[in-house]
Length: 339
Image (cartoon, rainbow, N blue to C red):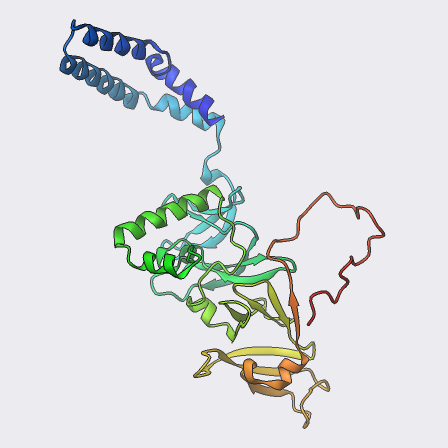
């Protein structure tokens, strides 16, 4: 459709841009050069003059192209609904569901691609703590069962907080040695992939060093190079989710509330937890309902937790129906992911 609109626009403004007349004339002049009937410099100069005139004429009549585009395509500012606020203008960004999904600021005409492969939702007006950012935050859910992570639209598209794409140490070393210009080019390539929806994000969309992730850091993940963070839904079903692996730790159902404290464990760097148990359901010997601990070294919470290994891909949303069989729990059963 885009190609047809472009051809129609070129044809309305200057048919010579579409029809083969100009090309045949230049080929004729090239034949004259080959036969010695014309000088190459004269032919090149004349061709440049022709295209300069065509370019000037096209610019003066570009409004005809705008009319065609406006009748065939919708403007970004007319699509989508207000979603979250921009940290720079304090204006609402509009959610363009895509594909690919993205946020659009109609006042600055800025576009912020969102991660592809999961679901993006609002996160109750919270703002990014990174200095100079201040964008309202989202929640990104991916996998089956879904793992949820904090997401800042601005930081996700910033080269300072981009996830590494290399798979080996040698590539990482080479990347570190690139100069600023090469890094900028690489970031532009990644942005193009995000805009095209070609790169799937099946993990936490922000690096583990990001302040949003660090504020929820509860335990290192021994099975991957990631960490476990507290699910940002904050209950009533309390869970820890791995940032780089499809692993979920279900915490005891007897927990009423969990608060991530500022105190940090010196060796592991994870935060201390303040746990409040439900009345009459405390696992502590003295029956107290309030408890503080570091999860990696605490036998009480670890002993009552359940680990589940899920899938990185989000469950498909088909047309429905049970398919073949009796519609039970499946071959693996409910305890497939336990260990």
